[in-house]
Length: 374
Image (cartoon, rainbow, N blue to C red; front, side):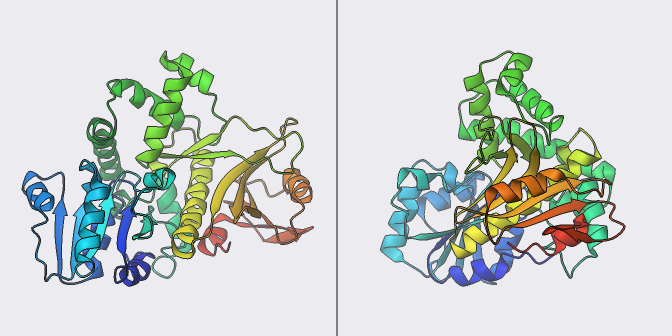
């Protein structure tokens, strides 16, 4: 499967360091090794590779050096900055990792101006457009999630075995590499609780009581899981919305197969993943600032997603299984947001026919995800 980031990364490698982040086993290494024929690959988790990397003893005449999980090196940003400032390019430098590599943005790190940053997501309908039928792709995503191995296996048994191993590595290796956390079992329970609450507003107080810890600890663990691309947060949007809720958020999984609370929640998670992937793509390739939010007011009117590009609402999306009656909340919030170019869509799994009313479109989930335009 050709990945949509391929041509962008390939072009940017000639200019600066490229950082490629994304969930574990999402296809970063496979993509990296297809970019340029002559490359050297090193995984910092492997002791033999680690010695070569620490000494920077790769072939200097190679076209590309791929450094996987190098963010686990102490002061890795200063180290790679020194190499880039001294030797420059070539060889081209590509760093990949299963934890977020952009956290230095918040700290004003010296890598600024020396890199391009990309996030690789699990498969989406739009990425596989032209490679698979949209309806078939959607069924596969709902059943197996978008990670390459379970998605391509088309086997529930293989997917279940992969999912267990995938989560075990994150819980017992990646988290320990990232933070000094001892309560691994408690974090595992937290993941199970979130998997049963996808699509619902999450109460930190309720999670803390269920697990027997503090709200502060829950928020810290949620941040760790986000940094490791296990979950992502969709928080409330409140600009110009009187009475909008500003506290409780929803959490979705990068691996749709983790969702345990029904087909409707899985469908909503598939849409959330696709919207986030598209927004990250726009941000990473065009430099625009993007965000994905929900809208809900104190009267419990709600729209599942509002897409923000350059601080302006661009799209409202409500997700339904079979109900083809328009959600009144779409009309309500479209009017209250007051954006001239705002688009509003209700996407339905079982859609007998498309229709439109007062600027709100109703169409199938498959068609919507196959042709996302933001």
